[in-house]
Length: 96
Image 1 (cartoon, one colour):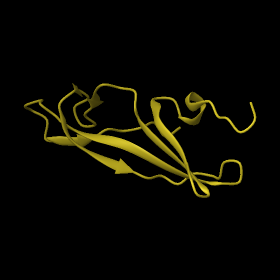
Image 2 (image 1 turned 180 degrees about the horizontal axis):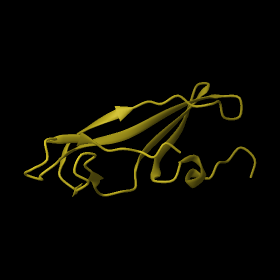
Image 3 (image 1 turned 135 degrees about the vertical axis):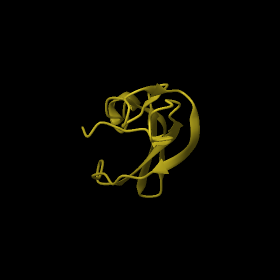
């Protein structure tokens, strides 16, 4: 299995691989969260109501001598808890 990667092994736990492309000298890997909801960091309540989406681009080490470009599709959620001071929050990913 030379030159082939298993997509599931390219993503950290909690993320799923959307696509993998070889563009020039780069590998472009797009990821998204496996979870269907986010948890408000202030009140701890889950929310499924998505306010918007945006892209995060963390840096990564080379893979097989080629530069890796990671793209994570992240979401912003509404917090519907009345007593919570936060109205919008970004989904968090584990430090690992």
